[in-house]
Every structure is written in C-alpha cells, then in structure tokens.
Image 1: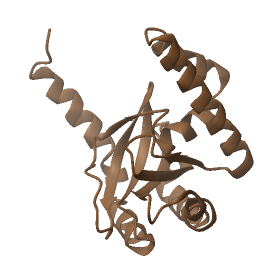
Image 2 (image 1 turned 180 degrees about the vertical axis):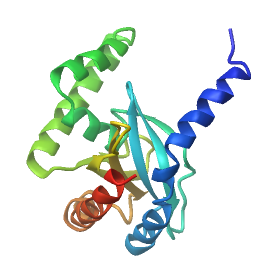
Image 3 (image 1 turned 45 degrees about the horizontal axis):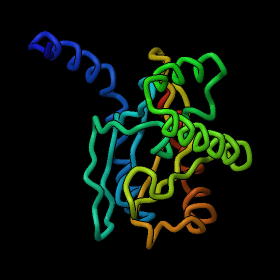
Image 4 (image 1 turned 90 degrees about the vertical axis):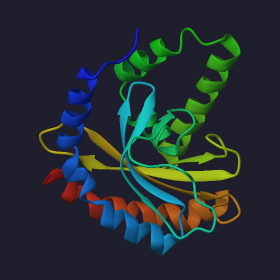
Length: 192
C-alpha cells in the first residue's frame, strides 16, 4: 500500500485550516531573533508525535533543519513532553496504546522520560528536552492556548545548541521569556 494523489486533498484541507496559525510566523521570528534560538515553533499533538504548524529559524550560528510539518516523538521533544503532561488519563492511555509494540526496554525508557516530564511540568509549568531529540540540541516548551473553532491545543517551543541553551540557561533565562511569549500568543490563537 502507498498514499495516492487523493491524500493531497486532505493535506491541503488541513493546511488551509492552519493558515491562521502560520500568520503568526513573524512573531515567532521576532522571538527567535530576540533569544538567539535555532528554531521556534508552534506545535500540535498527533497521537504519539508533535507536528510543527508554524516555524521560524533564528540567528544561531548552527541551524536545526526543521520546518512546518516536522514531526517529533512526544518523549523526545520538549513540546511533546508538555502535551503529555497536560493530557488527562484517558488521553495518556490512548497514547500508551501506540507504544505497546515497542520493546520492553524502550517502553520503560519512555515511561521514565514521561514521569520526569510530568514532574518538571508540575513544578515549573514548562518542559525541557536535553539532547533527547538530537545530541547537542536542547529545547524548552510551554502551552499557549486553544485555537477557537478547531479545538487544537498549541504548545510553543524553542531550541538551540547545547552550548547556548544549556539546562540552567533554559530554566532561568529562556523559559521565563518563553512563558511571556506564550501569553502574548494565546489571545491571537483564540481569535483565529
């Protein structure tokens, strides 16, 4: 089996419904430039993955090759860890069902990552990812609101090279700025 041309209609329909979100890209770009990030993105959840629906590359010397449509596993991405942490038990159970075919050691590692993410969220209202997606890339993410009419929940994330985005910098400098930025974005998302 393979996807045929009919799937293009679905992808265009989804992208049309997300066009308002992509109009926020200039704000993402300004924020990426301000904090020197490699990437800043708005994310949605799709099962056990997150998907970038809006994206900007910052002025960092080393760029992370990502863009709209980038898909990352929940346990690898800071945004995914946020989505997990804010999900109710039923949603978490639904996602866990997708992991049943993984080897036991992988499931155990994912469970450990998700417990740590939940504890971080409960303490700070943000989640980090330290080299979990790609070695040398660290990220932080937090919620920013719901898009009216779509029911989608959005998480904003930013990432950079570990030399500039070390864990202490993420926690004490980047995360507070990201929370302020998320609060700035929230009313714009609800008005789309």
